[in-house]
Image (cartoon, rainbow, N blue to C red; front, side, top):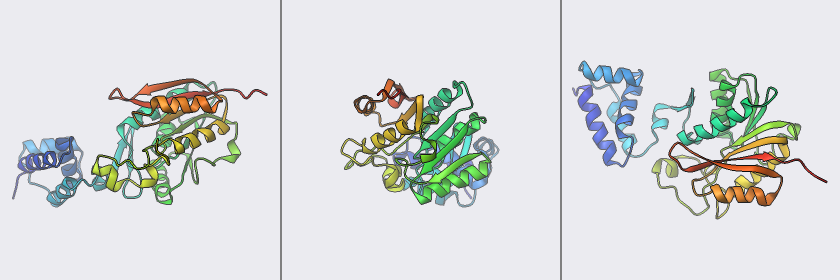
Length: 286
């Protein structure tokens, strides 16, 4: 029987050969999943000469075939939360933690308990992170896909966070909140139609509904979501929207051209790439 240290070393080499940049971390995470322990326990077990866990080789085979790590372990870590994910829902990315953080910062600076709406919530990651870190906020979210909506509801219920999650179109949702929202946050689909994601984990496993922005520039859906945000936000309310790294200037220009927005500022993600646009809803003048 192969010892754990050798199994993880061989798995790391295999995953690296498959083009996985996080090969060593993934090899350890898969071992932790097979052993039902924290990754730190895997490293301790490697030192003391533990045996390779049952099922580990099969997990490595699937990961080498570029099945997302999160689909194999069933979880994705997002800020302070551990979310359940799987087929039918977009796996939240580390860069989206910056988007959530900006929304949380804006909401925290309101002079009242804020109303925060997450349009295109997917797994519920952003909305749940906001409620986790700002318990006094009223947080609502909407998701178009019934499968993703089910994942979001399951995450909410498992975490015990009081977030209202509706099934519906983010470009039309929340008629009952028109002009009452302090912060609208969104990670909408924004990949240009006709483009193909490079990573097989995204291309072959994330749902198309969560990826493609509905136009050649990928901004048709984001523009429609922003328009809905403009309806929902009170005067002085804030939109926080994620975008592709090459869309920072074009999304800002689209918001300014649409009118009704001021203080449009783009923010970088943790890798220094343009990632999130923040804009303030301007008062309507007659």
